[in-house]
Amino acid sequence: MSQSLAQIHQAARELEDAQPQEIVRYAYDLLGEGLVVTCSFSDAVLAHVASTAVPGIEIVMLDTQFLFAETHWFATELRNKFNLNLRVIEPLVESENLWQTNIEGCCAARKVEPLERLLAEKTGWVTGVRRADAPTRATTPVMSYDIMRNVIKVNPLAAMSDDDISLYERINELPEHPLVDKGYSSIGCWPCTRPVDGAQDKRSGRWAGQDKIECGLHV
Ligand code: SF4
Image 1 (cartoon, rainbow, N blue to C red):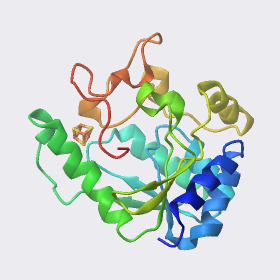
Image 2: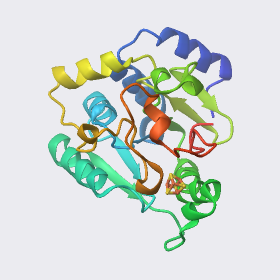
Image 3: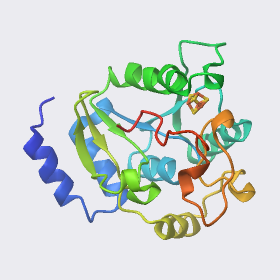
């Protein structure tokens, strides 16, 4: 990595009030093709932000093979609508049902390993993590150094509140994931995602009833 930690921290401070597209553009100017976006496709915002900031930027869907059919449909819709440069990465395991017995092992094999395989060839990683997602994400910086993956991690939506996201969707007339209307406020794999009551924490439908709140991607 040619950027020093001090430079990354300074950039994070300077970009704190920047618009999401400006943050992605800054990161692309810094890292060029070494920058990749990973997108959960639970909404359209990150894909729209990234592809309007840098048309043709590589956007990756980590397909655990347990995503909802609606998520695959939604990603295809967005790819066609916004002409996304979409790449799908699959896990090396295919038929194991570890989610029934060992969710940590399942996430490690189906989420973390594919991500780390991807990032081994990259220098920067754009995510959709927001401070408003959950208390565990409340201090998310706009930019940081991910020491484990040796990449600059860029979170252009970090400062956006839920209202900001809704406003962005309305202004840009973005489509909504079909499961949102059915009470899913955070959408991951079908075995580990439940709809939630509006009063509950948005991510409480993920691994409901389990002592787990993150999949291991954002550590
Ligand atoms: S969220 Fe559930 S199904 Fe998806 S990788 Fe993790 S344990 Fe497996």
